[in-house]
Length: 242
Image (cartoon, rainbow, N blue to C red):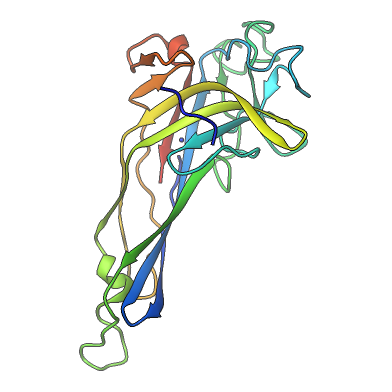
């Protein structure tokens, strides 16, 4: 079942102790989901073709709806053709612009597409959130002025896992302030997990998970495809990470 409108590559986790009362103390964990290794085997058939509401056919910006975020007209799934608005777009009309064509495909003998977008900053950042994790009161056991336990120290060495990961990818069509899109594919990914490193009761340091690639793809008809199925059926590939 395709996901309705509403995948990484490094995840940042930060913890801060928030004391709201004597009975409510939390270490606040912020996390971001990012995709990378973005690739398209060919191009979507007719997501951005002549006659559509478009300013740049066949090139289009791709957005992501996921388990932790909705689509945005930004660089959630950046491609390779740089536009003046700062986005990196993909060829999204194989019907009218078939391969080989070195103007609209940039790899594999001008028959497929690979991202050329930077791998830092907000590029590929498609979702995230906050977790408020209950922790104990800060304690200075030996009265030397240094907190020995409690706060974010309680989370040091614990696993933090994000489950149910998917990316539903759309070619975006912003029109009159309304963000709409043509569904491309949904990719389903394994769990993402990191070990928290919290050297202080006040915070946890940034950590990054391993990249994971899809174990399943879903097309516009609701058909599911696996890693051994033909590449044109899967169409889109990318890794994700925390």
